[in-house]
Length: 448
Ligand SMILES: Nc1ncnc2c1ncn2[C@@H]1O[C@H](COP(=O)(O)OP(=O)(O)OP(=O)(O)O)[C@@H](O)[C@H]1O
Image 1 (tube, rainbow, N blue to C red):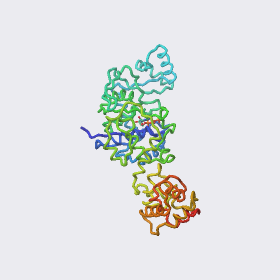
Image 2 (cartoon, rainbow, N blue to C red):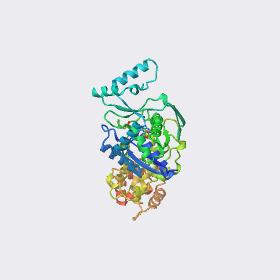
Image 3 (cartoon, rainbow, N blue to C red):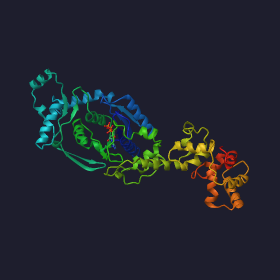
Image 4 (cartoon, helix red, strand yellow):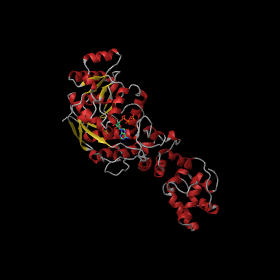
């Protein structure tokens, strides 16, 4: 058996959204789990809507997620392959020229629907004589080309949906090549899957009907026919579909505006709509280990941004300093060290929020003074420098013994004076970061 080869094949007509990313994640995890290869293929034959900027944006998004590709292809580099495949189909009598305009096709469809018949192409072009075609071309009409489907059953064992059955006679002969010579998605995709050795096509269920046609096309081109798996499409929280062109829920905005970590998105996308619970995972390897296409369910997964934020917080709570060290200076935390990161990571949902704690530990702050006499007494008991992890314990024991204050009455005035807030990271870890001088000043009510 040939080694497993999968592809993620976006059209570069917008930035990737969370649904597209699911397709990328599924394919990448499948490849890694099976020891196979993952290809990024830009389906850019739509010249009007594809741009190099969007292609670069898609690459940026995938790299940010950590989904590196083993192979890369661009359909616009392979146009000669589609021409060659079209010639083979013509020679085999499977590709035929049609001359109807979109308006004429629209009228035919309307008439069929009015008679409660399915709106299938009526194959009128197959009945044209050479003379008819010559006359149409003389009128200036250029042909588009349709695949002549076999009127036989098409059956495949879908890796997600189980056995799928279509009848060739229930499907319209698909247009493979437009009037202007542009190969359409259905065609280019199958030529590539065959020639690039794709063994498994894993994609959203928006492609199920395409698959029936593509299996026939693949056979007409001499195969081999890959395995197919179609997973349900993600909707937004209101149940509405996503579209690259509308820019909905793009990875770029989740990264740049919402400040999410790639692993939160990966953790969500690897598990949403599967029989596994959605949980934060600290590495891609853990997600690979859990992955099994058989766990993907048939229900429509709804994307809820709240889930991502919850996962993000969980991921940050365990994130080592090395994973963020490079990013902290650019977020206004130049000089932030491991002690600072370990102190604040349990209290943040997004990395940028660490800046709030950076300011509290490193910039002037107006303390909240609730009991000046108590704070003065506490100031007199502050241990001498140097301070370490035990300083807080020693200090509060002394304050407790001297004042008799306990529990909240002991901690809250100190927390408010030192941080200005009622909640936050453990004072045991914050105190050495704030330092003795600043602590003394804040205890006396000064902005420091
Ligand atoms: N909402 C979704 N949920 C899961 N997968 C999706 C979703 N939308 C698209 N996909 C998958 O993303 C992959 C790339 O598809 P494609 O580039 O056609 O994106 P698209 O968002 O459908 O495009 P467009 O909005 O530009 O029509 C395909 O495998 C497709 O099935």
